Image (cartoon, rainbow, N blue to C red; front, side, top):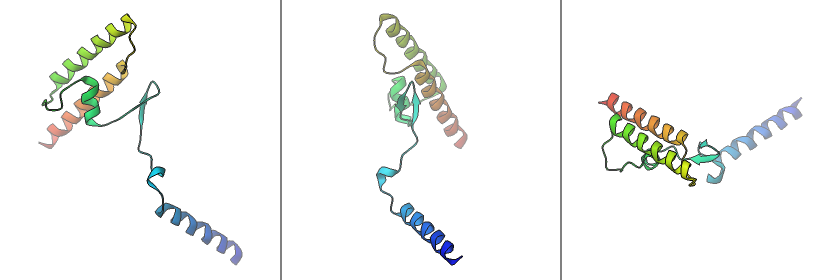
Length: 109
């Protein structure tokens, strides 16, 4: 019976040591994907997708205008056969992210 306890303790100690001595390569941040392309879920990336200047103060009207403009460009590029960097789902996700961020900041005030 003590032999089983020794084995369980050794396994437990090895797991604890592995947890504390992990390298940075073993930690993987969450990735969001759309059409099998990894999306960076940060605020600056949402500005980039909707082509909003980082110095611009955002509000729902500016976000909606940028979203509509990008959808029109994406539709034109699609009809002309150009390769697109972003898809309509990306624009929708960026718009929702920025509106949620705006609402969060408004709630804090």
